[in-house]
Length: 269
Image 1 (spheres, rainbow, N blue to C red):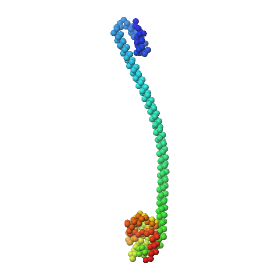
Image 2 (cartoon, rainbow, N blue to C red; image 1 turned 90 degrees about the horizontal axis):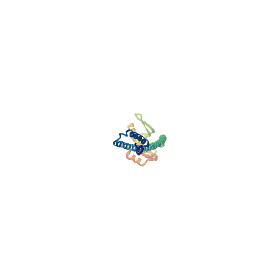
Image 3 (spheres, helix red, strand yellow; image 1 turned 90 degrees about the vertical axis):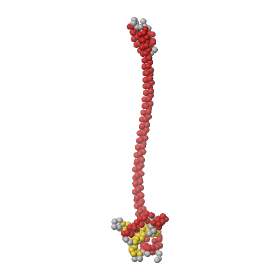
Image 4 (cartoon, one colour; image 1 turned 60 degrees about the vertical axis):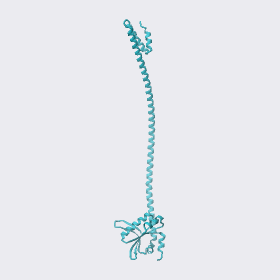
């Protein structure tokens, strides 16, 4: 009779208790059923099969162990990814907050820009007003010079240009094209029997641009009157470069300081 306990103990070395019991029962039954016909060769073959089954079981268990380790690594990686996701979400939240702060700052800058533009616009208006006032002041000063020295013009023209003046006025000279020139001091008379126009320009402190504009006006007037036109400028003071500019570029334009007008007028010929 087969030693089933011995078979069971041998099987326990390679199989679980449940598997060993099941295999012992099967083997015992086979031995009982085939006891009269089982040969040694067949028994050896059965042992090889059992050994192969044992090896297969070991490989299965090893593979299961490998899969368990792989599962652990997968779980660890998933945990790492979960932590990375948390960090990413936190960073996204930080960026969202930073974006909000940026938008608020941009809005503040936009408001500041609007205020700046409004301030600049007001400054432009104020500057235009100041310029207008200065222009008016300049005109007032110019008119003041004209009004003060207009009574001296006849004697001044006689002593300076040997001209006999019959008309002294402030005048707008109109042209055929509809434009006009405002003449500060318009003197009309004769020199040795020929028609002469003496044109004066008065400024508190004449500049180069004033000189250029005055010369252009003299050319227009000469063409308009078709007669000789002489020009002179009166100012309280001239910058040295303006005096040089007049002397070098416009020698045909005389220039005087205000106090010289009265001196020349009072000179006895």
